[in-house]
Length: 259
Image 1: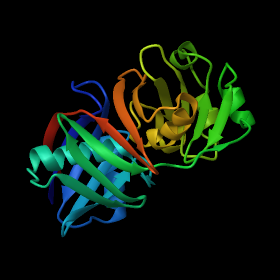
Image 2 (image 1 turned 30 degrees about the vertical axis):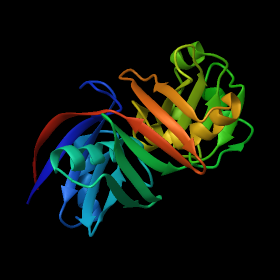
Image 3 (image 1 turned 90 degrees about the vertical axis):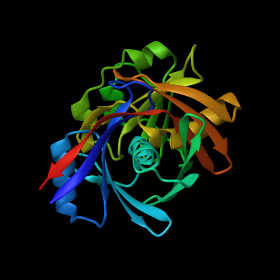
């Protein structure tokens, strides 16, 4: 069996930046074990598979170790493949996923994703998180991930968390964030529980970050940056109970999988 595969750098205009995702268009679903093995072989934070069904696409995402319910950057990368490589002629792509309906449209030279916001609940910082970071956060929230808010940018840029402690946290991952002098805010994302020590750019994290920063900054539109080693710029707008997450994408590789 031969399958097409594309590697797309999401949330960047340039290769070697942003967050790389492997994208595999399928005519019909493979079995779960095969998709998991492909994701493990790719060894990227996410591999996305999609199948066209009538006027929409069913999409699933896999880390090297397990399937996840939502992934922003691999959705953006999938939309890039559908629009730019598969020459999809509609103005909007509708993805059906475990997290509900996700829509992606073209926004000039960016791609714009329409995701549901995630409710965030303020909580005490778990003891393992306090031990994992050298500096104590000023606030902690719980959603799909934990959100740790720090005093300033340097706290985010210089953070070197104990990843072994983060593996035992009862969430998908840990987001750290602060205000920024250049952007509205910056962030980083860690998910060692799922084999991702630090994710370069995490689109789904912004479904949780935007409700928080909307309350803090009293704004509806944001320019943010995930300040990982590769880095990526993210443009967001809050629309009622949805978050529009926009970014650029760039093709790095296309090839054939033989299994």
